Amino acid sequence: MSKKIGDVILDVNNISLRFGGVKALTDISFNVKEHEVRAIIGPNGAGKSSMLNCINGVYTPQEGSITFRGQTFDHMDSHQVATMGIARTFQNLALFKGMSVLDNIMTGRNLRMKSNLFMQALRIGPAEQEEMMHREKVERIIDFLEIQAFRKTPVGQLPYGLQKRVDLGRALALEPQVLLLDEPMAGMNVEEKQDMCRFILDVNDEFGTTIVLIEHDMGVVMDISDRVVVLDYGKKIGDGTPDEVRNNEEVISAYLGTSH
Image (cartoon, rainbow, N blue to C red; front, side):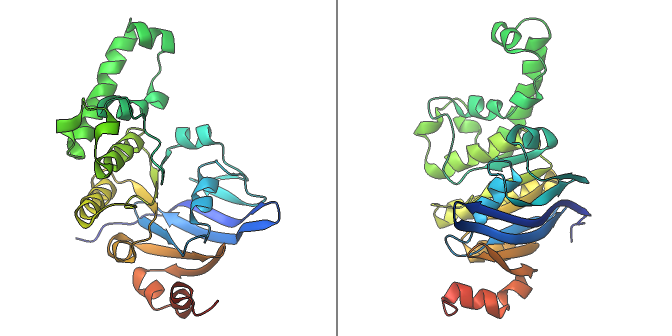
């Protein structure tokens, strides 16, 4: 059954980013449609993570704008991005290693909590009911990601592949409309990669979440993406379906190194 891809939800317009004299991104434009899996690929140093950092407000580009659901910003603010419904996982895990799986994923609910910290700490009044509601949501994510057996385990004691799953769970706890995944398969073995692919496709399918991912494994990208944008040395050299990108001469030469 083919899924229904909607209108453009995120539009990146002519983004340029410099660090001193170094150009990280030069005049990059592409869009993301609702409910699609959109991959950003390219050799090391192509500017992929810098692009995600512009989208979620970590970096401020010198030129260009980003439009999300019809609202245009010349730069995004990290807190505002999360509030609007864009969540992010990181290449280097930023989990709380001493805290349990459950508590790590609960931190993803913070933006959704209405009671203040004092009420949360004492669990008084509406704070207790609210916490129970948030816990239910988190338990559903734990079930979805098949990590029930580890819910009370400190994250630091889990194998790497499961830590990546917890990181995905924490991002899902925000209930994002758009999920930015920065190398979700990095450092995984074949079995862990297959599991992560399945979860990404399920998130896209069951939650209807739009996904933008950076990934080095070309087999994975070609299997799970609807469209692919290719960066090389901070410039866009390809954009289209996996088949179009696979047959693009400039993309082939960038990956095989014949153009440099």
